[in-house]
Image (tube, rainbow, N blue to C red; front, side, top):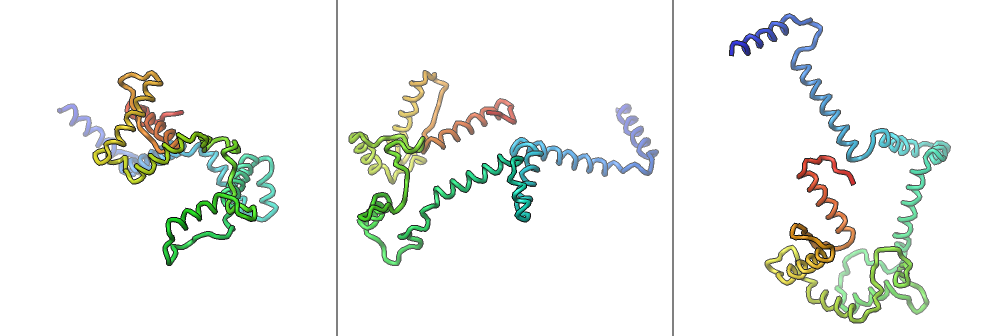
Amino acid sequence: MEHVTHLVEEVQAAYDARDPSILPWWANICIGMIIATVFNHLVVDYRLRGALWWRLYQGFYKVAAKFPIYVKGMVQDDEFDSLSELAKAKVDIRKTVHDEDTAEGWTLAIPQKGLTPEEILDKQIKYSTKQANGRVDLKKPDYLNGDVSGAVFNTERSEDEIYLIKEMFGRLAFSNPLWPKIFPDVRKMETEVVSMTIELLHGDKNVCGTMTAGGSMSILQAVIACRNKAFDNGVNWPEM
């Protein structure tokens, strides 16, 4: 204890004898905390959003793109080809999705008079099929003939499959799988699908799974499961 007291006294004496131009201890602590916070923020930001130089590069491009016409031309030169191509892709995607937004027959407000089920079904048919004049109300790729590379994974040619899907949707449309106690049949079917998948992949008793609403959600769930597993093992910045 005397050794600790003596050490404290020495520190106090050294502090009292310090050069007046040196900042007090509390100021040094504050500066150190600020530097550590900024450094940590930059590191976290780098991990989450990419390198600092790349964000500065993008920021410069966005600012330069607001300058007069001749500057915009310079911005869109070869030096910025990657960002220019990305901008073009965004325009193309928006045009593809919203090209028919000017078509007639859009219902933009709740009708004062409700529609009958037959009228609603007729609207859906009108939106998706050719009219008497040969015009399609809303254009879409002919996915059944292979005009898309993904998104749809069924040829809709099996009558038994179509019948089964319609029947199951009709029976379970108002169920909520988040409540297995209220809908035990849904939970049982989900469990069976997961078990079948585990068996196909030769999984053991330590393998588990869950049902999702589609392919994209399956990928997201798998990624977050791997991330959480990495966190449990002390990996703070897992990489894929």
